[in-house]
Length: 404
Image (tube, rainbow, N blue to C red; front, top):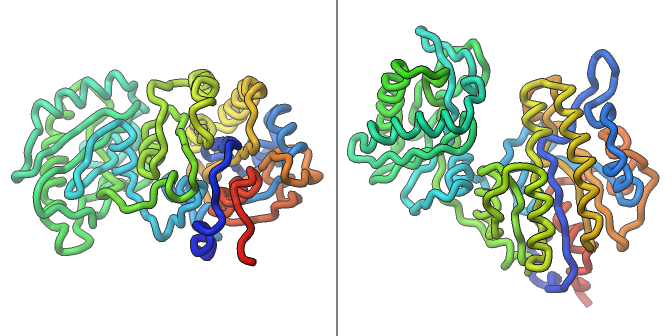
């Protein structure tokens, strides 16, 4: 990005504070019965108040028409080129729960899933089994599977149906295909090497899955296999503090987002489970940092489940509770999503995401509600998500003049 060429010349340290709120999967599509999106259907007086007092627009997470994963979508919001800095989901998951990695390790994100006797995937999330059940299963797997072909296998619960796996050994490679067919009703895939150097790693993982399925077949659980994806090693990425002269903190409950924050050099507040916890944490750490990333997951989860009413409820819950931050003084507040997750599609999508930036150093526009259609009329226009971080820095007066 061209701004990288001038960033070091203009960025400066100040006392002003920035709050970036990411409502995961915020954008949606109109309900066929009402013609309104989830945002248009929700009652959200506080979010609409931010829209009226700020500058609005839409952002494109990666590239037009490209559906992003959560990793690249968040990297964009943090001002990193997501195409140049491709970070695997496995590393994010593992780092998010505090698993230590070496440069030779391969991290993998796993979903417990349900399959039938023909290895057809019946439920990609095994009914979203409770975290406690996940822990019991992982305890059994850890006891029975420690080493395959000389490679150490480290398994740890993440949350609900999710787990993280680290392979530790020699001659490992992340260039592998996933076994996840991405949709129910399709056959479970086989891990295949995408490069010859990954053939040994593929053999290790296929043997791992064979052993896992044997163990799970005699356990009383909906979890009968593991969908493996996000094969990755540790990336090289410039720390947030060095890049922006900021002291950042991540306030999130889900491990993957904490993992991403750690990789870019943010401190992480641990032990958070609910939005109430996150809002309290924001107040608790307010005096220690100057950049705050607050993540809200429920909008995305409801979208992926195709539950239109639950996504409306998630938006309304956030709206009601965000009123509790009004006593905190931020030079800039930005509210947006990392990507859209329309209930109609039950998945992430390529659609531009609503964004509002509130600052005394920006001109408010005529947008009166935080919705997809309203934000098309915003003064910010449609921009790349990577541009948002630089607008936040400029609006908090953290840039010097460029050139003579």
